Length: 477
Length: 131
Image 1 (tube, chains in turn blue, red):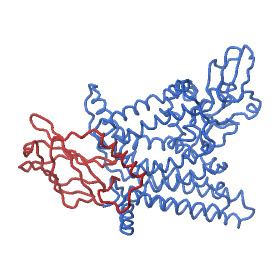
Image 2 (image 1 turned 45 degrees about the vertical axis):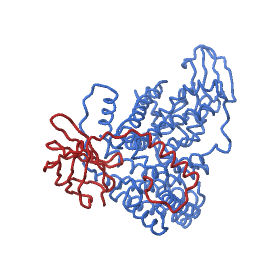
Image 3 (image 1 turned 180 degrees about the vertical axis):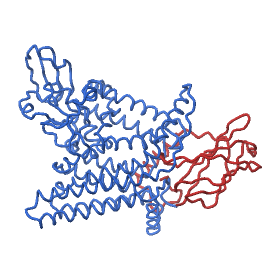
Image 4 (image 1 turned 90 degrees about the vertical axis):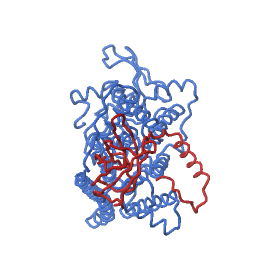
């Protein structure tokens, strides 16, 4: 039995089940993406006054974290990159389709791409360049098109997209998850339609054609009332009854529409359930570890001690090569953080068993940082959009300048979020230790390394958030 | 970070050369900023907080007199609160802000909008603000 099913909520549930709900969500984001590309290429090259930089680095990131915390992975559901699917289908008529290399069917490529992205973000000042931000958006569209044109649809989301996998990682503590209402229905399902898609006529039902193996053709009873037509299955190859986490779920809700038995729910769950009970694969574990410490590093790179460290390193090594210094900071900071986490996990047991402790911290670090920018710059998007429209020739009046007082008030909120994550981590640690150890001593011994790690992460996060922010374009004075 | 203007002691690697060439290529194609004004900024050791600043505005190499000058300060990073104040003319193309509020340390861009009887002119200048 499922708990509260969002798909049963009046109006909202009806909208989400509607075949074109995803398209309706995608269109506004596509419009903003196109405007951002236009403004990024042709508008004023000052980040706070350009739609590209404001929309991407302020609003998109802030709203992603907010949506994931209060609902789920809405931004993958509304991802405009997936509107390339029409062109992808067309291209597949002319291009050969390859199977994605087996060696890359894991999260290591995403991990590497995320590292490259984070390094580029700092080194090339992506946050300060509308031009490069516009190129980044174009690059994403091009990559989504070609990857899904040359490989099975969904490959981009699952194995390539750093943004999507970032969303998957943060969604480990979101309060909703796709589940099967009744597992008995799934075990007797003849076509695994949630996975394979469904082709339904008035008298027949079959899994959709494609590269999927099962093709069952049924003669249906005439009274079958399920909608007729073609319904795609899961783009990332998830089989609903085996879903135990939000990993790889884009909330496209294809499974909901493809299931002829109305057996798929978007369940409201305990946000810590995944952290408590799931045991992720090794590649996912490493990805979460990297993202957690990269989140701290990303926030650290916006406060004065980061620049002091860079200057100290520069003097110590006798170099002013910023790429080298940045690479060193990346390697040492991420290496130390990941190394400490691995040590703590080994002291408590196995790494994969304990990575769930990091899930709430992961969201609090990235969310706390992104929400600072979002709250501080929330009202800067509208004037920029109006300016871009005016340059496009629309007869509009300039929007008044959005002047926001500096919002130090966000810090207490960041502290609350950080401590919530800390206590959630403690709770997860206790639950895991209790389930693994036979006596109190065993529980304490398993908990101790995790508690120390959580304390370290908590102190570092609060220290970073408490510092005055500093936005600088060059690493060295 | 912007690529440092200082000579590197590390010989460039092939991958780095490619990355930097690509970066330069992309930047080279970026649209130029329209600046009507030449702006000279006078400010002493700007730090976070309030600081007096003086701007000398030249239009077609001549001091711009009797303009209504609005100065907007932005960080180079999107998502930071802008600061906007009106400058007071002190003669000979110079305009003064007694207490411009630098709310954060880092790289600032001051965008100048100067309105005269006949036209609106734009200018820009940059400075670093210390913690």
